[in-house]
Amino acid sequence: MFNLMKIRKHKLYVIAGIVLVFVAMVSFGVYRMYFQQETTELSYQNFLTKIEAGEVQEVYLSEAANLKGKLISGEGFITDNPRTDNLKEMLLTKNIKVIEVSEQFTISQIVIFVVFIGAFVGLAIFLSKNTSKQASKEYDKMSSVEYSTEKKSRISFQSVAGNEEAKSSLMEMVDFLKYPEKYKRYGAKIPRGVILYGPPGTGKTLMAKALASEAGVDFLAVSGSDFVQIYAGVGAARIRSLFKSASEKNKCVIFIDEIDAIGKKRDRSGLGGSDESDRTLNALLTEMSGFKDNEGIIVLAATNRLDTLDEALLRPGRFDRQIEVGLPDLKARVEILSLYTKNKPVSEAFNISALAQQTVYFSGAKLENLMNEAAIYAARENADVITEQHVDKAFYKVIAGEEKKDRSNIAQIDRDITAYHEAGHAAVTKLLCPENRVTKVTIIPSTKGAGGFSMNIPPDKMYHTKRDMLNNVKVALAGRIVEEIIFGEDNITTGASNDIERATDILTSMIKRFGMSNKLGMINYDILLGQQGVNQNLVETINKEMERLYEETKELIKTNLPLVEEITNGLLAKETLKEEEIDQLFNNYQNSKVN
Ligand code: ADP
Ligand code: ZN
Image (cartoon, rainbow, N blue to C red; front, top):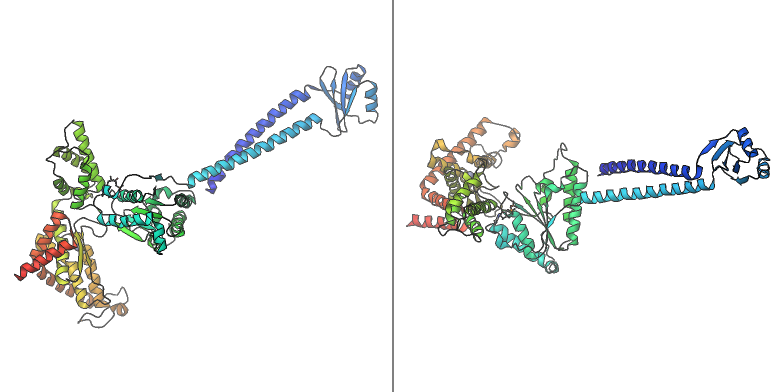
C-alpha cells in the first residue's frame, strides 16, 4: 500500500509541476502585455535628448540600477540610473511626471506577484487535497472487499436435499441467530465459526445461504482468494472492513468460501512463509475472537480440505465446529434428483431411483447439471417431456472429458471391492467387539478414507486391554483378508495401505512399549534401541505375531462369510449403512446361527 501511495503521489506532483510552469508562463505573458508593453533600452545620452525633445511622459524614480519610464508615444523605456540628487528636480522642470518607487517593484508588479503567489498556493492546496482524496479513495477501494449480499432470499433448508447431519447442525443455529438475547440471558455462547468441509458442489454455499435466509439475517459472501493480495496489509485491511460491515448489519451470516486461501497451515520453519498471508490470517483470527458474544454474527467457511487449515483457525472461539459435507449417497441422490425434476416435465416412465443408482459419486451440483442438460436436449427437440434418452445423452455429456480420477464412471468391480473390503471391517468389528458401535459404513469416498470407510467408536475406557488392541489389529486386517478370500490372492488391492499402517502401529506399540509380548518381555525397546533402532529379533517377533493374527482373522471371516456377504449386499444397494441397519443385519445373522 505504501509503495502504491508513493507512486501515485509522485505522478500527481509531476502533473502539478507542469500545470504550475504553464500558469507561470501565462501570467508572465499577461504581465508583459499589459504592464511592460514594448520596452526600449535607451542610452543615458539618448534619454537626455528625448527629455529635451519633450518626448518623455513619465519616469519611475528609484534607487535601482536602471531607470524606467514611459515615452509620450506610450512606449516604455529603460536607461541607466545616474542616481544624481537633482534628477527629480530636473525632470519636474521639464514637465515630466515623476513617480517615486521605493523598491524595485512597481505597484502593478506587486499586484501580479501577489496574485501569482495566491494562485500558486491555491493550486498546491487543491492538488494536494485531491491527491490525498484520491489516494484514500484508492485505499478504501482496495481495502474493502466486495461481498454479495442476499437478504431474504427464499432459499430454505428444504432446497437442500440430503446432507442430513450438516443440515440439522445448521438448523440449530437458526435460533441462535434469531434470538441471541435469549441465549445471552442464560449465559450461553453462540458458536462463532463453523467450517463446512467436503468436495465441491455438495451444497456448502447453499446451506450457508439457507441458514441466513431462514434466520432472516443478511448474508455476506466472500471468497478466501479475495484476501490474497500483493500489496502489504491489504488482505488484513479487507478482513477488518468485512467484519466492520458485518457489525454494522447487526445480525448476519458471513460466508467465506475457499477459506484455505487465507488459512493455510503456516510454515513453521520460517522459510518460504509469507508475512502477508500471515498478517491476513492473524487479522481474521483477531476479528473472530474480537466480536462480542451473542452479537448475532456467525461466520461460516467452506473448504475442500480440512487438513490443510492452520490449527489456530480451529481453536475455540474461532471455527470450533467442523461439519463434513460429503458426496450424496443413494438415498440423497434420489432426493436431489427429485428436487430437480420437480419443476420439469418428465416422462412417466422416467425412473429416478434407477438414475440415482447410475450416478454414484455425483455431487449435488453435478446432478442438478445433469437434469438441466437433459432439459436442454428435450427443449431442442421440442419434445413433450424429458425422456430417458435425453437423460442418457446428458449423462454422457456431463461425465465426458472428465479425468479418470473422477469416480463417476468408476468400474463396477471397484465398487464391489470397496463394498467387500468395508464389509470385512464392519463384520469383524461386530464379531470381535460387539460393544463397539459401528455408526456408519459407506462405499462413498470421503476425506476419512480413500475407497470408503467404516466408522467405529470404541466404548470410553481409560485403559486398553491386550485383547482390545489385538482385536483392533484384526479389524484393521479384515478389509484385505476379505479381498483375498473373495477375489483371490492375486487380486488384492492397494486399498489396505492405511489399514496395514494402523495394524503395524498398534502391534509394534504393544510389543515395544507395553510389554505385551510373551517372547520379548517387559522391555521398552525405544529406550533400549533408541527411537530408530532396529533389532532383527524384534522385527521377527512382530512379523510372526502379525502372521498369526492374520490367519486367526481369516478363519473368523471364513466361518462368518454370510455376514460379510449380507453387509456387502446392503452396501452395494444403499452405498451407506447406518448404525441401526448394521445392527439389524448383525442381529439377524446371530439369530439365524442360533436356530
Ligand atoms: P459447494 O459450496 O459445496 O461447492 P454449492 O452449494 O455451491 O456447493 O452447490 C452448487 C449448486 O449445486 C447449488 O446451488 C445447488 O443448486 C446444487 N446442489 C448441491 N448440493 C445440493 C444439495 N444437497 N441439495 C440441493 N442442491 C444441491
Ligand atoms: Zn480398510
